[in-house]
Length: 583
Image 1 (cartoon, rainbow, N blue to C red):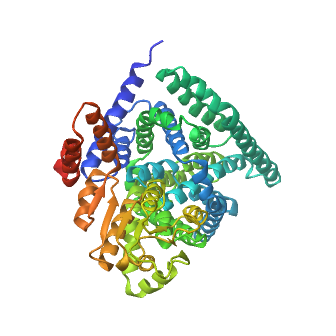
Image 2: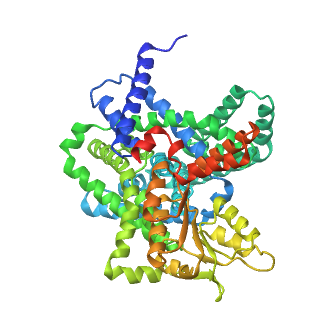
Image 3: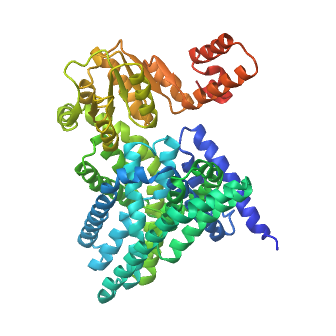
């Protein structure tokens, strides 16, 4: 049985034009997913009508969501999930509840909703954010491991759980007597699924993956990983939960086993391929004529919703003890309307909770808010920086973000400051301590601070400052003027640049070593004043090359000379040709 020629053509067209759209977006210094969205709009039924079978493309797009969340689950271990569990569970309830209340009140007062039930339904639709778009944007920016990235992902995962409850309640919204029963059954389904997932993840999946890996068959390993991802996602869809939730849990099942990195490596090409179809399929839903005919109304809705959601999320994040920096980035990242809101909106249309006109306006609003998400996330660091520059707010914000938890000896001097106590920072601290240097750690993670408190070398605690390293008052507590050096190992590129600039403003002669996240950033950090910039991937390649040259009989002195030349030249001789040109 062969595939329908039209479907093969549609798939080829979607992938080919998405690649072209992503390339154009990249050349214009925009996120690739914006190119995918616009590509879908152009080739879709409301554009040039080149796609003849949008439904099949959208079916494949759901696979993209599954792979996207599966990869996140593999990288986002249970340890990291526990770090944000408080705001993920309690904060998400507050966010959904307050958003729903706000939207219901405004819609009733403005006449957009005739009954409280319609207002509540509209609030639930607008309370959801986009897991796929936010995750893709954070991945492209290298921010999934940052504090604001983890807070966003924690809230999004909780929203996906809440979606299951919303879908369960939707059919009985017009029957108040049945709401309690529907809610109870939905909770039982969620708890039953999570209990089954924990059991499989502990006793079945590790052994299964181990046996498959023992065959040393790459094909079998890939097929098993794909089957696990899609199988768990299918189970959650049958339980009335989201596909995204199932795929994420499937990723968590193997995140703690030895073969997690191998599984991630196998799934990444599939994730990227199918994810671009997902974003293109969203673009296919956008009707330019509808948007143009109702442009002013849709833009007003987009502005109200995105600003309103940001204002709801901002105080919630601050209330859980996170900094203004994290709160602004989180509120700007989650202020869109999620892709699963399409599903809820369609169900509401069938039940008569929203009119056909309201539904079409909602589709346009959701689509535009999704397209604006990468731009909002990119804008957030500039907004934070701008707030700190305002004379009226500068002192207030600095006092609010002054570190309340610190352990710094009064006689500390000639020390090395390490900004960021993640995997890289912890190794660096171990190296420095083993050589007898004094170290001061700066981090805004409670987990990192707890690890420092529980560790003694020997009997002497490691000094630390709990707070955002890019905050001026936090930097003041580190005694930059008497420090020997500063090493920046933070996972957030924007924060790395701010720490570098503000540290040099206070201590111009301080030796600063920074970790680079992209090739382009090497030159940026060097120009900002970093004495040394380290690119982890290049350093791994240099170490491999060093061992290989040694195996081939090269003299150690010559090997060291080669490595020194490459580092002194800021890796230019080994960078990809395009990157050298851009630099």
